[in-house]
Length: 406
Image (tube, rainbow, N blue to C red; front, side):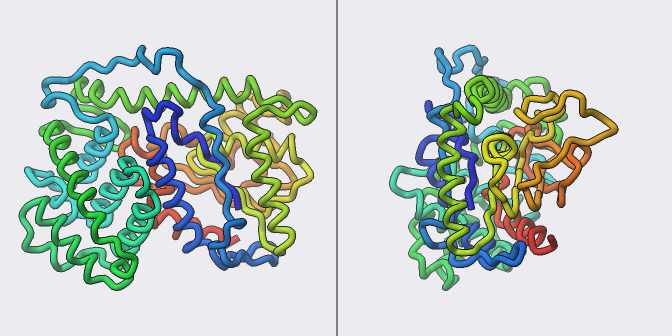
């Protein structure tokens, strides 16, 4: 199994620090080990994913685009009407809470959300933890994220929420619940709550800036100032994405002269393929965002003879780039109402998108063979949705369900 989605962290660390990228990889690895172990595809069974040679995460961020002035062209003015500056990483999370609220957030936003939707409150907290992970704590944070989300999926409405009145009480009670839960306590994760409390305080201060403002999942703002407030993280995502698109397609090379990014990812794909053949296990490739685009390009042109049991594209632009004919195998004469051929070496294909994720596209109307083309609701705000799929336990549960139905 391989996940060529390595362009999550910027070299500059503006969107993700290197430690937060490592934490996200650890979270994904833990969830995959739990949720995909035992998958059967084409008569082959995936087993013991804890082995070091079973899951690969090819990282190509250092080969992606760079910015000569570190995105200095992006406006970063503070919106005083919203209470001053807030960390860019918190802005979209605050908007997510605002959008997810059914009856207002008041002065204690995290507690208010937990009483309305405990699962969403936990997802918000764990997302913040991943993005603000301290060096050396990546594995500990990952184990906590997986454990507490599993807890929230079982205890959807904890009784202990009823008599709480502040965010601080919520964090304290959540810690007690964690300490009492044997599945979590055994992993020694209680001390992680110092970081949880800090993240909750930052979020509380940030949400105060949203008071009286209206946000919906599609980014419909009642205030143009609010749009300016969240523009920074959105523009950073867009700037990095388009920069990487140009960088990849300009330097990818071809079968005879393989570019740096395809070459690095192919090393892990080839290693995963070799291991799956020895173990007689299915080869699964999961690509997020540009990772999905690159995987499609690699399988259709660079490795057309490599049989893949399952290709999963998540929040990706595979169909979009076929529409504008950017792949080596794209046939410019092929257009609607006909469909482009799915590479024959892809046995099964699952494509997943969130309708509020501006970087995700459906595939079934463009390609002739897509087993599953499914919407997944990250329950986040438009700026945040693209990075949230792999942080959420329910995403892996639904993916496993889709795989089992093939």
